[in-house]
Image (cartoon, rainbow, N blue to C red; front, side, top):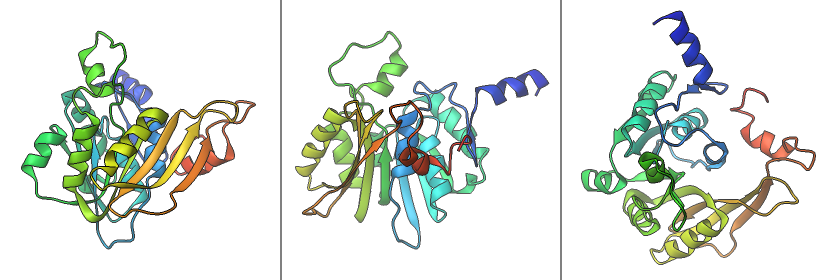
Length: 248
């Protein structure tokens, strides 16, 4: 590989404290949503933990979970060939390569081909239901629910999650509440959630939530502001992401 290509690759990669990712072939790029989900998803007290990342993109969430949960074996799936190419390379270049696997397939076909059940399922899924689309087909698939309606996602989670498992997800606030309400019809209940706003003076933009088969009387709820009013990162956000961002 030429020095120019090595330099170019270094520049286009996102560098975290213990790993780097390239997302040039993935229709959806590394963003705050993925980092929030990777840092926030709770772990479980199990001897061996199996994790499924639905719609992994370049694999950043899977890599964050591999860093955080040392006894986890992680399967990642995506329907986009470019995303899978990036994820495969990013996994191979990490120190957790033996615990990470990528599959190019839809969640529907994955359900048909496996009898595996997972302790933890995560997803940063497509969420636009009724909005204008771009002229980029791959980006539309990654951002809109046409290829993965909420009901299909919930049915898949119900099939793939083991009895004591959990599903962690991030969605815009309104869509997240719709998802949580729909999940109840499949006896999947919200047990933990975090509301996310850019600043204290701004409205809630995102909701992170966990679903399980056990209904609770009181949902563990918190609120996170990414930045303070002076535009600096909040202490809570820095504490959540301190094991990953190189600037902390």
